[in-house]
Length: 209
Ligand SMILES: [Zn+2]
Ligand SMILES: [Zn+2]
Image (cartoon, rainbow, N blue to C red):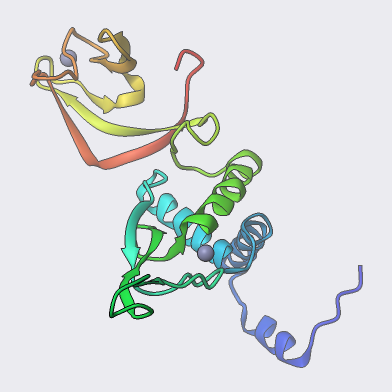
């Protein structure tokens, strides 16, 4: 295949001495292009790529929060609506301004309710077609990953990760909650295990999860 570089590009190539560094950059560019292809390049796409990048950082797709906004939606332009007095001496004057209901990510990027509905559809496509390494809510589509936190057992001294623990049933849900070595458990009001919420890894779910 013939590749035609511009002079500027050729000069930049000349500066790349470490090829592993170049390969990493190329891989990153490919990844970002794939992301843009699925998520889109409009404001909804930007909103979603912020959400996805946050998820990659914290290991899970964070809950999108709602709030009332005095400003319009960046995507569709919907604005806060003035409600007017219908009768009386102030008829026609502004009674109150209805804010726009918005949905925002952890870092504050937001869209309105209608745009969020559209964003959810794109997000589902992303979760199904791209293999993102983070955990998400099963409401979207079954999640193949689980965030496994570092744990240690105070009863027997075992150290490991949650995904190595035994499956237990507490009456309403099954989860990995029993020490790999003894009967110590992660349970309500139990102090058997200590969980390090800041130290985790993303693993594929086992067949029995
Ligand atoms: Zn909107
Ligand atoms: Zn133990």
